[in-house]
Length: 354
Image (cartoon, rainbow, N blue to C red; front, side, top):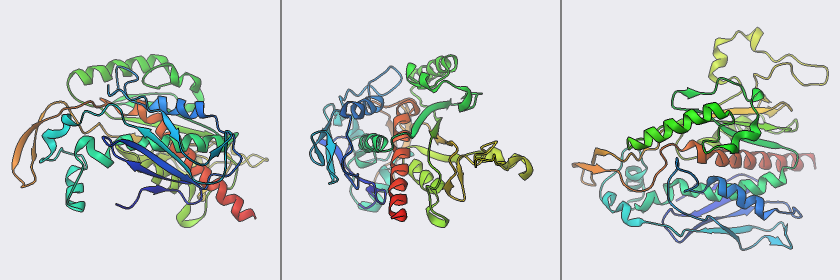
């Protein structure tokens, strides 16, 4: 299986399955001499881990990261950073019912067709549990990106959408509720709705908005390696993501060019930011902001019709512990992938300037 590595200079390779002994990764290209706050890394994992509230999967995992290499006396050495997160609360028997059949809208069928063999326990490698390794790598990238602020938050659940832009919100309130929406009133409504959907044995999708502030001018390359193209790839690599838009996004098509153009101030900043902080594929120093759409979780705790390995129609029932809405736990994943992209381009800029 290829495609387990992300990044060019600052890169991470992940390993492990949902119900294996552990998941983990190797971070290569991290510069030496960065003093790591391991507690801050663990805090990022705690934001993503299961069982943290009543509106997420109740799988109980401590998700404690253990580092094996690349660190000495609290600092990075410049060598590969190896780490692992041990799985402790697997319930593989919850998945025996799908050993010989395929769950709709999961990777079960395509894995079988491509590889001729699959780990059906929790989806194996296709499980979103893999993203915990990304969070570790992203947490280290954040500490490398000193001065750059990356904040993601839930801006929509189902049809419930925040009617405020990120500039009108107090993003310090994002962690004040289990939905991770910085508007308390909207968050309460979203939480009630997610609980209602869960009682029905169903799931619901949502949108995460991410903002990166204090990004220097010049990150990104013209043509194929545009900064927004790499951010799009990063976000679309996250489980359940169905859409990515940056800046004015799809709403921008409603505007005329004369209104959409970001007029300059004398210092090079712009009066508006419909470009989303990126022009010509290169960061312009303004805030980078984008939205990521997540589909409803495919596992519904209801009866459904599907097919088995022989193509016969069979009846099945959703089982196991699953998120009724993935977006609250995906917030730190989005931040992590953003940090990995920015760290990669920061190192590329250093190489070019040399």
